[in-house]
Image (cartoon, rainbow, N blue to C red):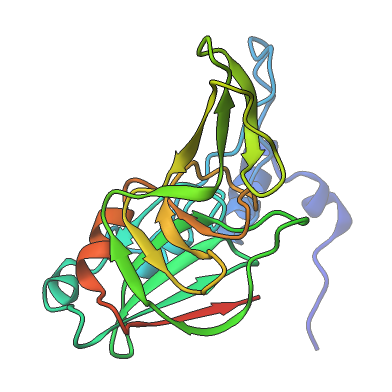
Length: 222
């Protein structure tokens, strides 16, 4: 039979011995507040993945709505019109360049806003023009050169006598549809903002343009 120590013996354990006993059992002693602490401490996020990996890129702050571009440099070097394809994700506002089934680049895009939604489905690049201007959307100036309308639609907005219409710049144009939807360089806020085209960030568009060809498959998904 196990005997219980006399009560006086238990009560005579010193505070130091009790602290040692608690710590040896894995109980952490409370940390005293710092009287000089005047502002709350903020948690610092540490990405747990290996730098340079795609999992690290995806775990970065605000992904997918940030401006980060990820490249698999080794596979990207072997990517060309013979094996490239593109997927545009409208929900994430990201573009993905593939070499076969291997992802080689992940980059930010801006698709069509609510009143001009980008079409979904499978398309094939039918035209590549490095320096192009829109014949549908642009700016209208009067005869004196003053801006009349900065978001003009050439189909409905009239050019004043002596004035001119200047189409919006669309560098690295890659046509997807016959009614004017394509991929090109443009402003890329982290939300849909275009007239239906897939605006591609300047940090990625030249690479996409170089790696694809007329006939390259482009999938636009939600």
